[in-house]
Amino acid sequence: MKTLTFKPLAVAIAACCLLAGAGVALYPAPSSAADEKKAVQKPALTVTTTKPQTSKLPIKLSANGNVAAWQEAIIGSESNGLRLTDVRVNVGDVVRAGQVLAVFSSDTVNADVAQARAAVLEAEANAAEASANAARARSLQTTGAISAQQISQYLTAEQTANARIASSRAQLAQQQLRLKYTQVTAPDSGVISSRSATVGSVVGAGTELFRLIRQGRLEWRAEVTAAELLNLKAGTLAEVKAANGSVLTGKVRMIAPTVDPQTRSALVYVDLPAGAAGNAPFKAGMYASGAFELGTSGALTVPQQAIAVRDGFSYVFRLNPDQRVSQIKVQPGRRLTDRIEIVSGITADTTIVVNGAGFLNDGDLVRNIVTPVASPAAAPARK
Image (cartoon, rainbow, N blue to C red):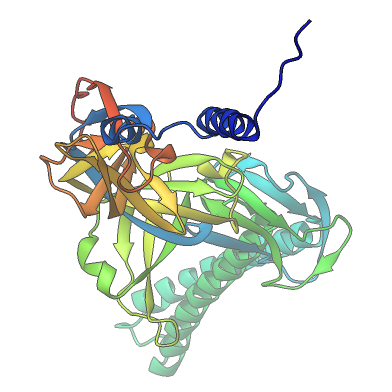
């Protein structure tokens, strides 16, 4: 049997061939430039686009202020030194004009009325006698039976007696008025907002017993700057929202004739709907915010999802002809449902990304598959 022998040169050549094959397997040849470009141009996202549309948006002026009573009447006692025997209303009660709210003791007043009535009867009797004497004196004036001095005395006595009748009747009227004041009545219809009357107390004339919100009317006293006053006038509608979320629509009644020199703001008085004082959500003294409706104006609007907010700024992404997007900084304005006004940054013929805008970066390549149909323009604000 023959023994195989390998020469050193042959062994070296074979080893080099094996190493070359291994190098080819470990480090394949780089792909072509065309394949690289193709991989780079792969779209980053599939998006939808649209163009801004012109809509009618309401013009509103925001303001803050307090809710207060239109007029608050103070109901006091007109009797002096009488005891309060009955209180017939409480805070929150709705009353009508002339309704009895409280009653004072009338015993002493009734006695004074009876005394004054008796004084009138006495004065009338004395006047009747004086009138008869004066009539006889006049009949004897030409006969000389009585002196001129006596005749003058009889005539003067008649006049004095008539004056006493008038005085007695005035005293009677005064006592009857005191009797009337023993019943405290409402000067107007409205809602009782405060009560300090207590049964059994003896109060003096002028003491406050109740406070009344006249006709149950409330108003919103909005604070606006001097520059904003030019946009407001009587009759302008305002939507008022209380802190508890309740909303009422009121109307401007008047604008204050002066501006506060400290705050440089003026008060605008807005009448709230009648009966608001009885409506639990709105109470006098509440703080409320609101907005005045100043009409409508044209505006360039985009869907809300087309705006991406980054680092406190608003951006939209414009779709370029090469299917890449450009990030554009815009200034948003008013909002109506799901659309936002764009004040500056784009024009009406700019194609912007809607769905997917929040995931894009400047220069991304995208694939636009659908262009949404423009929705109808927003309805104008109520006038």
